[in-house]
Amino acid sequence: MKFQLNATDDGSDRIYEYCQLANYDLCSTSPMIYFGTILNENLDQTDHAVRYFRELLRLVGKTHPQLPEIYDALGDAYARRNEISRSIECYKIERKIQKKRGILPSKPDEKIREILQMRLAEEENKTNEPNLDKANLLCELASCSNYAQAEIYLNQALQMYEQLKLASPLMSTCIEELVWTCRMNENYQKCLDLLYRRLAIEEEYLPVDNQKLCSLETASANHISFVFKI
Image 1 (tube, rainbow, N blue to C red):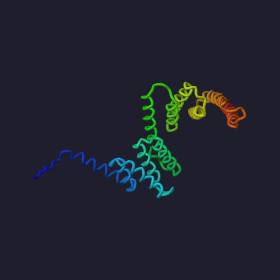
Image 2: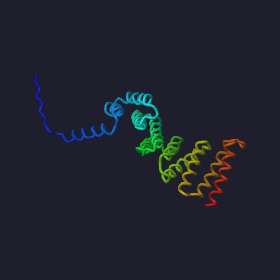
Image 3: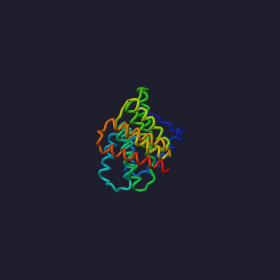
Image 4: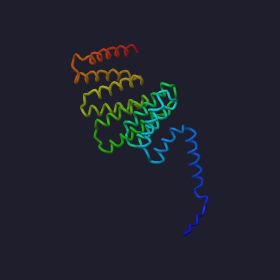
């Protein structure tokens, strides 16, 4: 049996574009990272990619110049495997190393934000009612957003905690972050209101002689002095 193959130029522009992109990836990424990326994105061998990048981290050491890129690639592999918490942790480590080395970040915050927004959308699809997972996700979103957007997320999270009637360390931490954000946004009156609310919340679940509660009372007094000086 014989087969006759006819060659045409159909789709040649797409082939050329693919080759150009592949060549760019190869030139802009080190071979050791590119190999794992191919496993993850092109060969659908994500489990092998995760093991490969974890082994790379073990071998290269903490001073390797491409350590941030390895964490970034490992985060992508975890995200593809839907291990969101591990993925976010890798991106955070990448950002921390970049800041320590004075390197301009490759926007890991945007990756984290996209994943968190996706998870929040999934929770919204499950139920319209407030729940603890939604509130916690909003707090995480605030941590990788600018001050203006962070204030919106934290206000939404605080509202959910209040609707759930949760006087807890989680709610107290949310208020603490919101105080700092409002201060950065120069909303000093709201800072004071929030500090009093935080104090009232912690009084509900901490004993009167607790050291943290005493420290918070002192911090509230100092913050009041700071605002009135302004």
